[in-house]
Length: 429
Image (cartoon, rainbow, N blue to C red; front, side, top):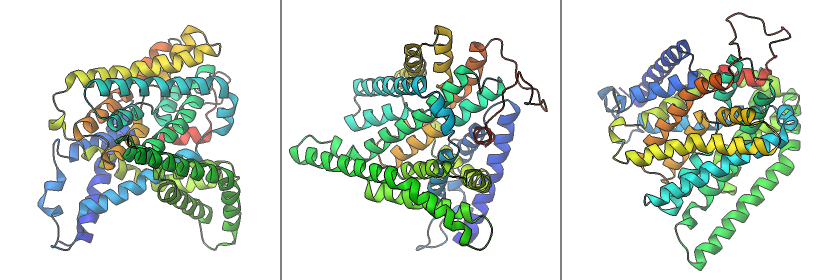
């Protein structure tokens, strides 16, 4: 069987398994993303290990392996996922709750990162590894948070708006930290004068690239989307938007030395500022939900080998505690400092716990860059799973009077807040 046929069969198996697992997760009230991730764990070395099956063996000595092609598709999925996250960012909501959301997000980045760093250093990890482990803990999933709030009719509440705004700001801050760590990792391992000069050059290059994209990106994106009307055919605005995302992703990594997803996310934000936002979102979502999204999440799960969890049980337990308490305390204190009550601050902190797809993306980049060991990589995936599982129940506990939405119930009543289209699409993805 040649490689082309092998990849067709492989993708078919991956997509069907992902969607079946997502359906099962949905039946239990869990995020679809969680089901797709578990599908990858099922197909990986933890159980089935499809890469070890004879029908996926290399077709010849010079053939490109199915694994390599699959990983390339997964990398494209990451870029597309972050582009859509940028497009779906509710800028109005973020501006409305900017003060409490900013301080909540800042606390939720600083405390988990510091806790992860010092814990990792105490267990003998290098500086670069410890910084990256701390960076993984800074993530918050907008998708999972939005879904949990919608189930409780609290999306437009004071706490709900603050949580979503903080999650968006958290993503931006996390991407900046992630890009800095990816770019500066080679220099962090050394302390010589030459490496410090390299550190300064790398940091300056990254800042220059970011500033250039922020200054000129919105105008160029708006111009490009207007010119899309000249093109013949369907979905031209989405095609132009995707081209902008790929170019900025390339620019971020090749010119700025950052993670490619930084440029893709910024491209999504720039599209979100234009009248083409809804059309681009509607056109790109099917591509993400039906193909690239499942491929990425399954590929991530397939990297996990439950038999390689390792013997650092105490490290894992403390890392999980930091992942949970770091968000609750960091985000809660940030909200409390801006006038929220103790109860409201607790709700904000709990809503920021889940890592979801953002944590997965961060960990996958660290694994690809060699910044974390396989043992830590697997433990991070388990932490992502656990934080995703516990958040809906904790939110329900902190919102004791919330009434879940009944299937088919109208959201137009006065007591049920309307859901912004962007956030709704993200949660349903």
